[in-house]
Amino acid sequence: MIVVTLAAVVLALIAVGGGVCGVVGLVAGYAALRTLRRLRRSLALLQRDADGGSFAEAAARQVDAVDRLRVDVAALSGRIDDVADDQAESLRRVGLVRYDAFAGGGGRMSWSAALLDIRGDGVVLTAITGRAETRAYAKSMAGGRPSAPLSSEEQQAVSAALGGPARALRKSA
Image (cartoon, rainbow, N blue to C red; front, side, top):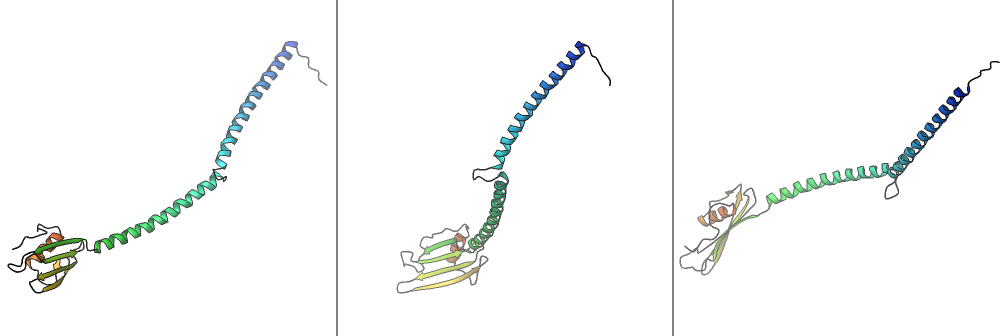
């Protein structure tokens, strides 16, 4: 057996060194424990949401909601295209000209009206009112061109409907 004898100073230094290592270990352990507690609290916050589910479940619900919204937006986009097509075909350009068809008729009882869509398709309606009778005429329009020649009043109504320089109402001739 080997017996080692150490001086009291060396033994004291070893004891102090061991004590310092122990204190440093305790401080490091305490710091690690505090860090671990903070991490556990943060993890607990991430693992639950307002509904009691986990963060991952909440994220999955949000992804599903965004996917549903994308489908809804695509459907609405198609519906908007349909509405735009319907609007282009609606008779929204209107021009009206009132006039006296016969000398001395008075009251501008005759009229011509153009009802056109954005492409210039539609109809021109004319009512010629005399003392004893009224006659009505209709002429179709396609692409801004009439199916039959237009009178000057009908042409004024078409120009007014298409936004041209014609006056919408004409005084008696």
